[in-house]
Structures are given as structure tokens and as C-alpha cells.
Image 1: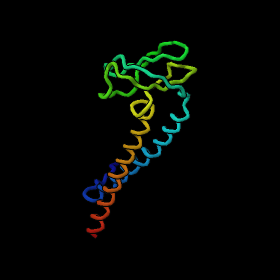
Image 2: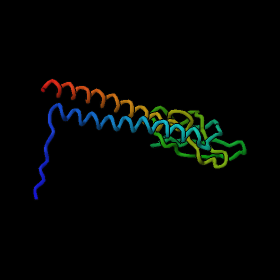
Image 3: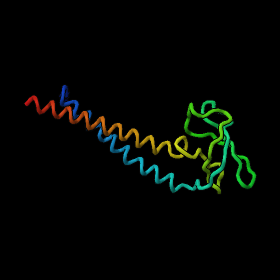
Image 4: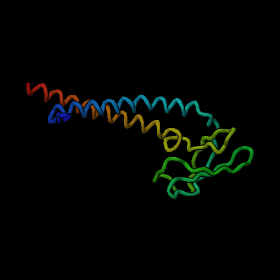
Length: 141
């Protein structure tokens, strides 16, 4: 049994690619508030001043809790903006101080911002591509 596959070319392909980008864009824009709410409701309610002790390749941060414990953690987000010795603000869970991250866009809000940025970009590209594909397809009939 032979299955025939019809190849889509030209302006019709633009509409298909555009719709794919639209779906990815909507997924990103739906993920951003979910990630944001998850971080906003996280138990990382305490804040402390920290210091970057190493940046090879991810920033290693050291900070002290009010009880005097010195905590070291590796931030999940790499950045060329951070240098050894830089002072940073740390958000951490007071019950589990090792549950810590940098407070701000290079830490706790990075993935929320990334999802929003990529979702917006994919939505714009998808909308534009779909629009161009439909106009060109409509012009051929």
C-alpha cells in the first residue's frame, strides 16, 4: 500500500508555518503567567545580601541568614553581567535556606520573562507570516 504525501509549497506553506508559530506564541504567553504565579507564591519570601564568589560557568553566590548560617548556591541562570565580587540580592526560603536564587530578572523572574518574550516574538512572527500567506493565496485565486 502506497501512501501519497502532498507537498505544500509557496504561499500556502506560509499560512501553515504561521499557524505553527501562532500556537507556539500562545503557549509561551500562557506559560508566562503560570510561571510568574508559581514564583510569586513560592516560599522564597526572605531576602538577603549576597556576593558572587565564582562565575565559572554559572554564578556561585554566598549569603548569610539571620541565624548566622553561611549558604552557598549555584544560580540557574548564566550571565555575562555578573562578575566575581559583585553584590547581589538573594531570595530564599527561610525554612530551607538552600532553596535560594538571585532576586530579579537574572534569577527568580528569568523564566517568566523568557516565556513572555519568546511567546510575544512567536506570536508576532506567526501573525505576520499567516497574514502574508493568506494575502498571497487570496491574490492567486
